[in-house]
Length: 244
Image 1 (cartoon, helix red, strand yellow):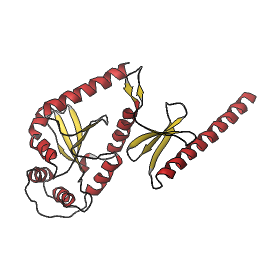
Image 2 (cartoon, one colour; image 1 turned 90 degrees about the vertical axis):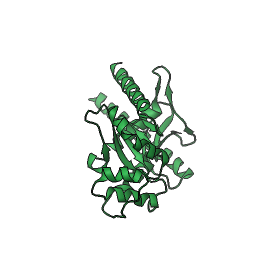
Image 3 (cartoon, helix red, strand yellow; image 1 turned 90 degrees about the horizontal axis):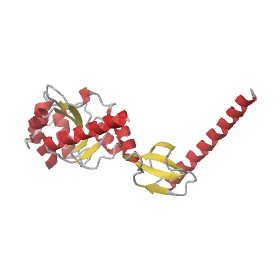
Image 4 (cartoon, one colour; image 1 turned 135 degrees about the horizontal axis):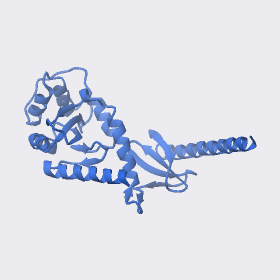
């Protein structure tokens, strides 16, 4: 019984210490960026440092709140980028909250891979990607669009996205808009602003931004054959890691 009480007391000490460390870390960040939105604070693999998720980014702050480190932590023994792995998990979890009816999806009859694409109607490489949709689908790649009008909420690009979403046939409207055709100006309940906010939360800065089913970010346009090779490689690496 004494051992039980001793363990409970030790656990309480650890809990109080952890809470104090979290408070110091939070205070240190807010000293630098008063309006910072801190998504999560957790213990880091780096001794004496906490891992902080901050607006789609991950940084490391010492437990005493004195030092801040930006950059990736790489596990040399296992050859794993632990920071990017964490980002992937965060992106995967966030995108899981966006159901299929809130996306505009172009998919083949047999799907090998699904890719979420943050897109902007007026982005040149976004248009090029869409022009090659048949090629992506022929390679077994489903493209699932979310919105990221780079000029922001209320911009003309934002309105073009709304026009597509509110059209009777969203897929056809997307194809017409990507071809540079002007669509009828429309309004309806739409996810454009929430998609844009999600993109900012995930650290998206440009379009097209491609995110795999495992949450890996592939910034920029890739031809279908190159994208398939990347997706196959990522899948094989993930399966090998699970096998180990």
